[in-house]
Amino acid sequence: MEKVKSPKGGAKRKLRAHFLANIGRVMDSDELRAVADNQSEWARRVRELRTEEGYLILTHNDRSDLKPGQYLLETPKPQPAFARAISKETRAFVLDRNGFTCQMCGAVAGEPHPYEPSRKTRLHLGHVIDKSMGGTDDPSNLRAICSVCNEGASNATLTRPDLQKLLIQIRRATSQDQLEVLQWLLKKFPKQSADFLKP
Ligand SMILES: [Zn+2]
Image: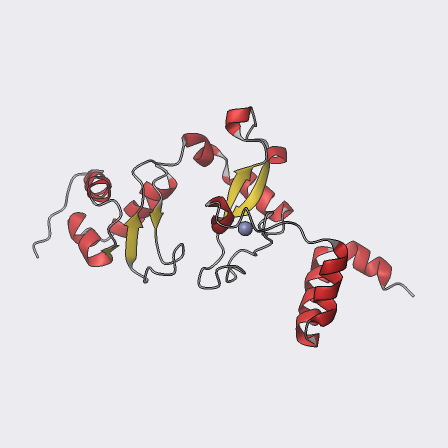
């Protein structure tokens, strides 16, 4: 294949047009590299379409039926600007405050999703009070939500467990799992842990 440099911005424009002309079709890296005139930075341009322009370009990190190197644009509608306008600092602050844990189902970032184990948990920021209802982008109105809950897949079935049921589940768990719970709690509540352990 002949290597032609396109003018600045050309690769991204071509990739955007190609994705929009192929909604719902899985494409691999060879195809996208060719669309971008074999520019070595084609993957970065795809990332920019995702992070800067809000196009929901999915990869194997988002969907288990996609292989590494496969890409899929499911919908032509980019995420609204406000969903992207939240600063990196705010995002980091909210995720840290929420312990990198989905506030709806308890899934932890980077771990297999408890309800869809083939998917790695990715966290987004969700609004507690929706923007359409007057909610703001203030950290107090933001919370970590995983992609599964974000898609509404687990809304209906997941309620916060009551204390008694939770304790029963933990008592029935293997010692190994109980130790994991202990570790997680110690890490989450360092100050209280120290108080409990005082002689
Ligand atoms: Zn979730």
